[in-house]
Length: 54
Image 1 (cartoon, one colour):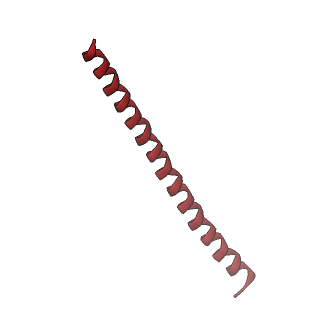
Image 2 (cartoon, helix red, strand yellow):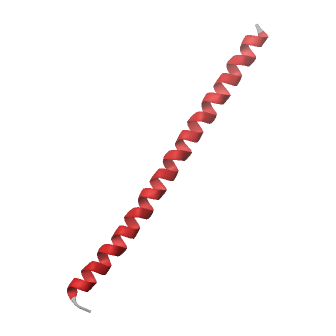
């Protein structure tokens, strides 16, 4: 295999790895958004309970 073919193969592999890293990052971002949404729901529920107790 020529050095050009080897370089191309490495570039393709790096591209695949980068794509996987980006997908993991997007997944983590979604999880962060879900955690924030859950916190907001819990906070709203707590505020509602406090309002009902007054």
